[in-house]
Image 1: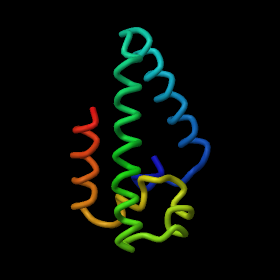
Image 2 (image 1 turned 90 degrees about the horizontal axis):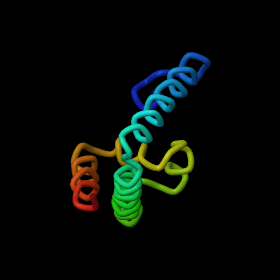
Image 3 (image 1 turned 90 degrees about the vertical axis):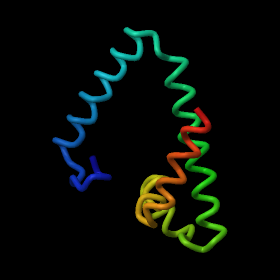
Image 4 (image 1 turned 60 degrees about the vertical axis):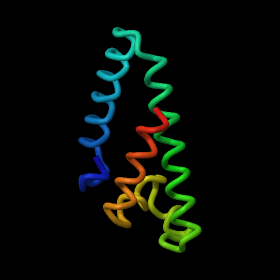
Length: 94
């Protein structure tokens, strides 16, 4: 919720917990554990690839990565091209 502009707080925490609980019930109920692991590892790998390219090109700094709070925020802030590239790499990884 922080990525879409909500401030951290009690309501954000409660919504996060409810969404997490719903996801756990769906994943375990539909036996989707294998696919969740595949998707999470592909998304993490795509993030590592695109973020390392942005670091090498000097588009983001290490301070910007550490200050963002999560590793995907610098990719989202830089431009739509990098976000599109990140999505393509993640889909290819899946």
